[in-house]
Length: 220
Image 1 (cartoon, rainbow, N blue to C red):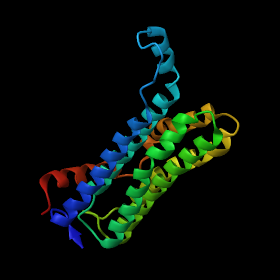
Image 2 (cartoon, rainbow, N blue to C red; image 1 turned 135 degrees about the vertical axis):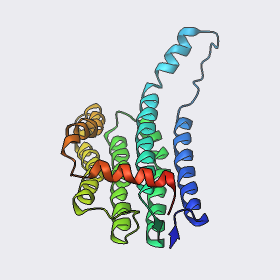
Image 3 (tube, rainbow, N blue to C red; image 1 turned 90 degrees about the vertical axis):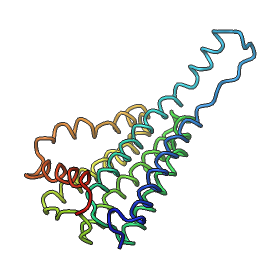
Image 4 (spheres, rainbow, N blue to C red; image 1 turned 30 degrees about the vertical axis):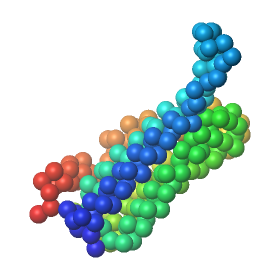
């Protein structure tokens, strides 16, 4: 059992942040500098850069997606008072799929109009979202939180973590009709989150606010 403030707890956090940082950095590698015959030609360079538009789009989509997961991971670990080996292993599996995301991102940028490339990316992201639910369940079932989470808040957290899974998996069949429409479907979680903001269970905001305060003050 690793308590907050211990070297072991800190190492897990540092390792997790390192994986996120590397994954987000590797995204840009998929964007290559174009090669043109006439190096002085503005038109040729502009055309070559325009040919990489899909790679730029996939980069920014994936940067936003992984950035969102990093924020959620940070908020989740702010809730913990300690972690056990079950949670450590679950976190390692989660990080493995985060580290994998640059590959489907490259695939998406190269074959943006190919429904299989879009599907592979969507499934990879859906798995990461599903593993967020696993992390929350491990911590909740083992009593690892700094303060006990009510059943209502726990269910709401599971629902909100699992919602992106549904959107990304739903985009898979849509991709075989329109890859553009499938991509737009990924952002459906944003208006949904805004629309349901006022339906959070009682004590939700206070719970997470108290956890942030407790993290700043340190373990008692």
